[in-house]
Amino acid sequence: MKDNPYQSLREFFAADPEKADKEFFGRVSNPDRRGFLRNTGLATMAAMVGTSIPFHPNMPMGFVPAALANEDILVGKDGLTLLNDRPLNAETPPELLDDAITPTSRHFIRNNGIPPEDVDPTTWTLTIDGFVDTPMEMTIADMKANFDVVTMALTLECGGNGRSFFNPPAKGNQWTYGAVACSEWTGVRLKDVLEAAGVQDNVVYTAHYGADEHLSGDPEKLPISRGVPIAKALTDNVLIAFEMNGTELHPMNGAPLRLVVPGWPASTAHKWLKRIELRDIVHDGPKMTGSAYRVPNRKVSPGEDVAKEDFVIIERMPVKSLVTFPANGASIGMETEVRGHAWSGDREIASLDVSFDFGATWQKAELDAPVNSGAWQNWRTNITFPQAGYYEVWARATDSEGEMQPFAIDWNPKGYLNNTMHRVGLRVS
Ligand SMILES: Nc1nc2c(c(=O)[nH]1)N[C@H]1C(S)=C(S)[C@@H](COP(=O)(O)O)O[C@H]1N2
Ligand SMILES: [Mo]
Image 1 (tube, rainbow, N blue to C red):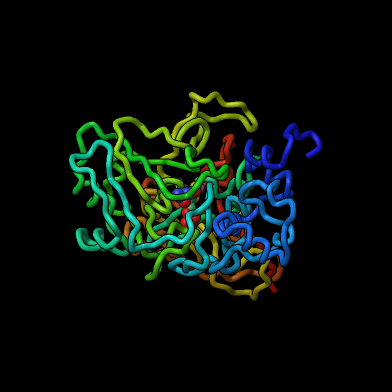
Image 2: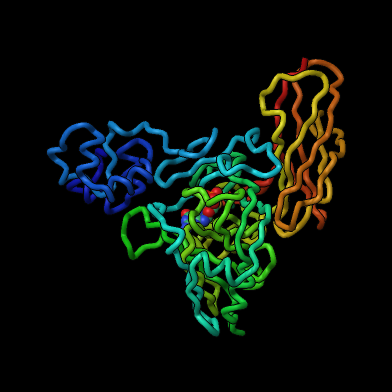
């Protein structure tokens, strides 16, 4: 803080809350507690620190007393790695993604802002407006009464999954492998709702709005508002979901209502969903423009400064796979099962090959069909190692269009779409 030009902590936080948190706390603080303290007020904060706070007027909104800094904030999650706590971002180690359907406790969290609190699913409404014949406002009960309720296993992967492996490094959450999941979602088809409202001929894009707040606390600003081309919105596996794995959504995964857009950057899968607007232009909300969720339209050299007009919006996510058993670094016997998942946005996986000799030879894994369109595919194979020693298991998926996972990918400025093969090191004896 030595070069900080601001007169007070309040000013410092108001100007750039993310930067202020990082510089002030060394890392970012906890969004849950932040909101909690703001709503419950000074009396609660005093009770939590155990005494009164004489200089409380100097504390910026959402300030977290250092004495409370180490509480567990990943409530209801199991074994996730915290990457950032304001906004909250946490990923799942690959070996904890071993289930065919990802339990809620192991679904990653990617927040851009501050989630809403004390949501009431009975009064929550969703508005459909913009270029529709009949703008609508509906509760979750209305949705259940008026549309088919469907349950589907759907893969969500953050566009930045794998970012930590880019060199030169790309700014943003340093996801390794675990910003991906395939939970079972229950809800209504976005398509059915949009068709009931009447999609007008000039519609080209959706725009999604939620109830989370911008990190600055400024009600005029949105943390994120993305959308998809109307054709994607009208596909059968895009859901407005009110249940996750047979029960209510986890608060950090969008309770009580969210979009689930399988196969596309999960940033399109809006959480705490309040409104969908149909637009006659490509949506231009926060995180739609500039270099957010966009990649260069050409090969660029590592570290290159890419002009804004050379970026295109990411659409489908590329072919990818994970090894979920054994865990990287495991010690195992001469024979083992190797298994995991594979997925490719808007496509199916055609084959999954495994190598344990650094890619010289490959063996085909047994590959399940997706349980429904938009679900990842489970695969498994048995390996017999020729002798004791260090091995790496590599998994390589190929999709229905012949696209195959690469050894290495081209660099891009924001570190998106890293679909290189997953490598798992094993000590065999
Ligand atoms: N309202 C809202 N929706 C959101 C976000 C957000 O910050 N706010 N993050 C998006 C991003 S970038 C991702 S990757 C997914 C993550 O979903 P999850 O946290 O349930 O895993 O939510 C998307 N939906
Ligand atoms: Mo994301």
